[in-house]
Structure formats: C-alpha cells, structure tokens
Length: 610
Image 1 (cartoon, helix red, strand yellow):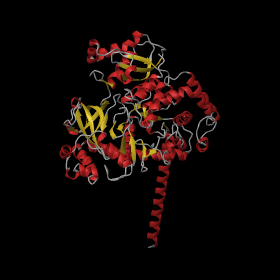
Image 2 (spheres, rainbow, N blue to C red):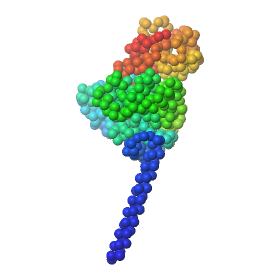
Image 3 (tube, rainbow, N blue to C red):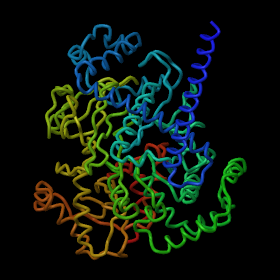
Image 4 (tube, rainbow, N blue to C red):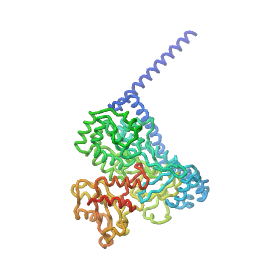
C-alpha cells in the first residue's frame, strides 16, 4: 500500500513538474511575443503586457462579432424582421405605440400599411416633451442622450439615443478591428495610436437629460489607455486647440506610433495643418520635456501630463530635421512605423481624405471604417484595402426601407424592403431604429453597389436636398466637387484646400447679379489670385459635365458661377463658427458644402480676399 502511495506521489510530482515547465514555457513564449510585437519600444513591460492582453481579447471578441454579422447576412429576412419587431414590441405601450397601433403589427407588410413615412417635424413635439421630462412618449425607456445632428441641411435637429445605439457602435468597431487585422496584420503590433478626440459641448434638457453627440466618448478606459499615445488627462481637455496641441505633442514624442485615429478625416487634416503652424513650439516642448506655459489648461491636467514627459533633445532634433524638409509625406517621415489612418473620409470628408493621401500621409493606407449618422449605425466597411468607400448595411438593429430616387419627391411613395433593391440603383434610405424613429426619411441617397451574401452593400452619394438647384438643374454635392477638382486642375499651380458654395438667392438683394447663379468660395494653395478667365473655367466645366446646367446657361436663365478666394484658415474658422451656432462637436461635424444658412454665408463672405 505504501508502494502504491509512493508511486502516486511520484506521478503527482512529475505531473506538477511538467505543468510547471509548460507554464514557464508559455510565459517565455508570451514574453517573446510581447517583445517581438513591441517593435523596439522603450516602454515598461507591464504596460506592453496590458496592451498585448487587451489586443488579444479584442481580437477574440472581434472575431465573434464578425461571425455574428456574417451569419446575419445569410438570413437577412429573419434578421430584419427581428430588428423591426424588437423596436415595435419594446415600444408598443408608449403613447406613440398606442396611437399607431403597434400591437397590431406582426410583420413588415403590416408595419408599412399602418405607419406613414415620416420626417423630423413628425417627432419634434414628442422629443421636446421627452426633454422636459415626460416619459413613455416615443420609447419605453429614458433616453441615454438627446443627440444633435450635424446640421448640413441648414439647422441642427435633436434625436433620441439609447444604450442600444452605443452597443451597435461597439459591435461595429469590433468588426472593423477584425477587418483591419485581416488586411493590415501589422496593426496587431503593440504600437500606440494617436487618437484625435475632443470633448463635446454638453448641455442638459429641462429634465436633466444630457444633450450632445450620439457617440460621445472615445473607446478609452483605464484598462486600455496604454494603447493610446495621449495620457488619460489629455482626454479631459475641453477646448479644441489645447486638446489638439496635447494630442500632437505626445504623438510626436512616440517615434514608434502605429496609427492615427479620428471620427472624420477633417479632424486629422486640421491636426496636420495645426502642426504645420505650431511645430516649432511642439519641438521646444519635447526638447525641454515641458507643457507649453502659454497653453490654457487647468493646473491639475498640466501636472498629470507633465508626469509623462522628460527632456528628449534627440527626438526634438530628429523632428526638426524632418519638418525643415517640408510637409509632403510628413506622417511616414516622423513616424516610420505608421501602419494606418483610421477615419471616415467619404461624403463631405472626401476632400480632406484626398489631402491626407496625397500630401500629409503619402504611402499610409486610410481606412474609412463606418457609415454612421445621428440616427444610428448604418453600415460597416469590410474592405479596408479598397479605394472605393463601400459599406455593408448593418441589419442587426435598424430596419431598412428604400425609396427609388426618382420617387423621392413624392410625399408617401411606395418603398422597397432590403431584399428587393437592385444593384447599381439609387435609393433614399428609410430607417426604423430602437431610438423612436419609425419609417424615418433620414435624407441620405445611396447607391447599391453589390451584395455581401444576401445583404446590400452601399455607397453614400449625397443628402436629399443637398443640390445646387436654382432652375431645376439639380447638381449634387458630389458632382459639383468632381467638377470643381477638374476646374482647379486647369489653374496652374493651384491646390484646392477647401470649398463651399451657395445659391445666389440666399444673398437676397446683395447677390451682385440680376441672373441667379452659384457663389463658390475656395481656399487654395499655390496661387494668390485668379484671372477672370481662370474663374470662368469652373462655369465651362459645369456646362460640360451637366447638360441641364448648360441648357439653362444658354437660355440665360442662369448666370455664370462667381468664384471667390478666401484667406488661409477661413474654413477652419467657418467650422468653429458653425459648430458654435449649432451646438455640435468635432466628433460629429461634417462640413457644409452647400450653405443654406444666411449667417454661415455671411461669415465666409467676410473672409474673401479676391
């Protein structure tokens, strides 16, 4: 019996030794993998380990989220039916649900028959009541936020945002992370990301509901701050110039930076423009290991940030040499290991994305990850490597309907369901979400460019109503942008930095011409002035690109385009002015390419220099 016990003890001891060796081997492999992925960074090991484990966990979670999305696209009818009925059943006992007989809705056909197509005026009074504290009006829960739209139609509106909306964004960025790793595997290394994030301007409704952007917080917490170049205190800065300075300061300190991230390409572009003006101050701070004394931040934030700095003359000298060589391709020169720029560069941000790819970030891939709006998450880009910005519709939460573009002018046109749309056709998007919007005409015009399994893949084309349309010519924002680029290419030495336009009718009696026409404001680089012949090139290009415009010009119904050059930095000032007036923030702002607001037009007119 003692022999048997002895053998058991020996076996147990051998097993413990083997287990211990395996644990040691795993730890050694883990340490080797961490060191290999660190790309030679001089960071504390536990900081790298935290980053490593966070990335690993995110990778596993993102794979599960990708599989869930893939599965949903293979049974699209059931998934869409579930998304619709979830919203209907959840809110059927609200005042709105009782008014529109939600208890009778059992499928999409009944829903389409019982509920009309809607626009914002349909909800305005109900949202105001919710803001004052009334409950059970549109949705059964208290909204998490009241979310402002970006106001591209001329005025900002307010919608409801629920916890489900935030969850959708988190799931979508899981899918984005998976797509990113598949195409750009080096993004899995332990390099930090420079996130250009700015605190939104918060206010509260009468009942204390926060009013701000739909997705206000960065994906940062105490657990994953090691993934970002800016210390946590940097995300507490409330003013945009100071926050931008701090983001750039800590990004420049990190030679091994792996990615740049922001909600929109405009934010990244303006950060580089800011860098171009402030690089000498930033280098001085890096050399001395200080926070610029003139920077208007609180003493508490300054002290927290100062703890992450020490003098680095070597890095400062390296940066000075690169900046002294000019700013073309500067991103890859100051960050040799930069793998990716993660930012939305479709729609009104296309011009900023173009500047990044062809000037500041030459050679660095730009991935436009999501198609989102205040109404919720619309789509996700599964193809980071493609130049075209195509988005798979997100079928899990929003119930989609579509209006063929030639029926958009009708009040209650017949809609198509998600499984009824056709490739290469244009549609207006209709959404029903969990935040109290039902058959809502959000105003986006999209083109169905294909299908992923059974789910449509779309390309954003324009906003409904965002046309230059004096006489019925209907030149879309996208079409005008392409024509403007062609005209600028005919101005020797000129580079288009930014632009907007307006119909002359918005000027009233001060339009300066008896014939209605387009007023175009451009910020350009490389030339100080344009001749009248050069300015007229834009009108000629518009006539070549649009037969209807050409017809009205020949009839004399439209006057020639008037082109104005504005001072450098004017569009950044216009951005700040619009946001201050509409109460929006950088996390959701899109430049207004076609101005509909007289105040905004007056502002940019005051910046004209030629």
